[in-house]
Structure formats: C-alpha cells, structure tokens
Length: 110
Image (tube, rainbow, N blue to C red; front, side, top):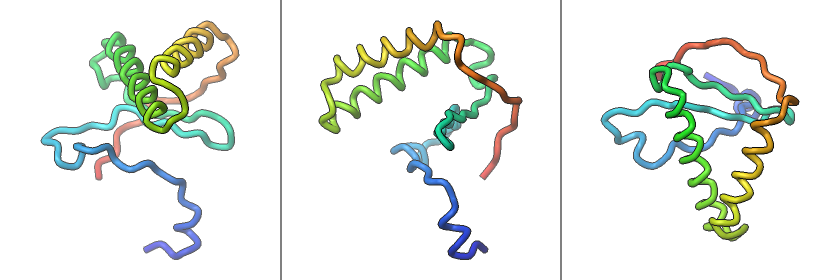
C-alpha cells in the first residue's frame, strides 16, 4: 500500500485509449515520456517481427492522430499540423545530434 506522499511523486500517465480494455487482444507497442527535459522511450523491437516498415507506418499513423487532435484542440488545421510534423521529422531524421542510450527490456504483465 502506498502512502499519500508516495502517490504524489508518481509520474502522470495518460489514460488507456478507447477500445483497449474491451479488446480481445491488445499490446502496448511504444511508451514515450519527457523526463527532466529529455525524451525517454521504451518499446519492444520485435513487436512487428523485425519488419521496420511497420514502425514507419506506426509513426505515420501517430502523426495523423496528433494532427487530428491539434485541429480538434483549435491550435491549427490538420493539414498545417501534418506539414509541420513532416518538416520536423525530416529535419530530425538527418540530425546527428540525437543522443541515445539504452538496452533491451522485457514486457510487464498486469
């Protein structure tokens, strides 16, 4: 059991997406956090059975969802958001300034 001080220190997580709890099959494929100003990600590189093109499709689908949400939130229209996301993606894909470290971790069953 956690006391109140421990609960306040827990990081803030997003809710599960609609449809996950009631799905016959569901698996988390990517988790991303910004912790102390740096991006922290965890994923299973075997999720798509070593077909990296599926990771490209996943990232594209995420961009579509972000653009849709940005439009729904009133920040800008979907097309403009997608153009900005695409430009930032291209710029950062060719950057050598990205610092990375990590190791392969396993899945956690709940």
